[in-house]
Image: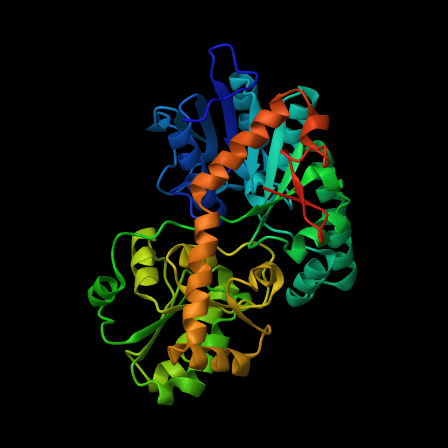
Amino acid sequence: MEQINTRPSANGCLKVAVVGGFPPNASGEANYTGCVFRALASLHGALQITVFAHRSAEVMTDGDPEKTSDNLTVHRITNPETRLGRHFCFVPLLRSLLRLRPDVVHFQGTHTKLYGGLFGEGATLVLLALRLCRIPTVLTVHSTWTPADLDQLWRNKRFPKALGWALTRYYLLHTRLFVWLTGAINILCSGEGSPETEKFRRNYRVPDAKLYEEPHPCAAAPEIGQPTAKQRLGLQGGRVVLACGFVRPDKGYHLLLDAVHRIKPRFADLQVVVCGEPRGPDGATYARSLMDHPAVREWPGHVTVRPEYVSDEELDLLTAAADIVVVPYLRAVGASGPIHRALGFGKVVVASEAGHNAGLAAVCRTFPVGDAEALAECLAALLGRSAEYEKWKASAVRFARRHSWRAMAQTYLRSYQKLLAGSMAFLYDPTHSDTVNEHPQTSVHQY
């Protein structure tokens, strides 16, 4: 176990507080937080990790703290399922943090409506109070919306032009504020050297030395083998293409069905599964359109759309069974959980070049955004079991070995140690070779 060499709390332990969702919360940020901090707790017994998470339909009352391990405790103190709970979340958060007096606080994807206001202003109030109390903070940003992304979002929602302009300007100012308040900003990205990281730095005026890339870790492959997974799902004998995640129009699942409609006659054994929970009214409408797609109607039992929540256990089984995982997003303002789950399982991934996905061009087979014909060509080449298939499979395995949850946990610890060395200058000195590695294109640091 790595020795912690930093300023500990009075009891000799390094106290880390985490603000973010935690399983069974349904948000993607919650699953990420659960994976990385469980890994950190298992690696370092000298840490005391306290997570301040959301109540949920499964955990609606505070009750007793959840002791997931000897040194990882979860308190459910925020309630985003009520309007009052969202907008005043900073009250129980700040009270709990000041009572704990942690050595460092790590915020995970907190600037969303789950933390009140329009864009998580409640979390910003907590950051302000912690800065005044001189408690070091780290913020992992899970979504890197650019002004252009936001303007397009407001147009899609048919907001009046003046309102959309005002909302984008407000988001810009609010993001610059929480960037200024935070000790270190980690951008959760898909791969190393993501162009979206540089866009974030430029749009929100983040000091170069304060901005770090946090490549999304890859899930560990389960012990279950592909033949067994296919048999349990009734997919044995076929080549399986999987697309999974929240169902919304921007996920682009219709492109996969369009591509399958083109190539299915050439691959009689092709099995296609699209699954995930619809999000909002637009998601429900989109799900119905997917179920009515010609590919689903013409090949029932071979092309399946399941617009429903899929448990982690079943998702592991589906991913283990897949030959190819497709991520056809039209927009990618954050790292994709399905991509990194698939890479961890050693799967060939086909992804659009949208947003953060572009940072994985050397790891995944990519295609132009919105181009169903190009996607069909990719799938046809890969389903032919060509040398290209083996190439992308090998790249997935190599990437997953470099980017594990364990490796990210070690990185978190090093960042806390540097913050607590009393030395923001040491932490942010790009000339210190052991501290950071400057990326030649983005001029930001990578873990």
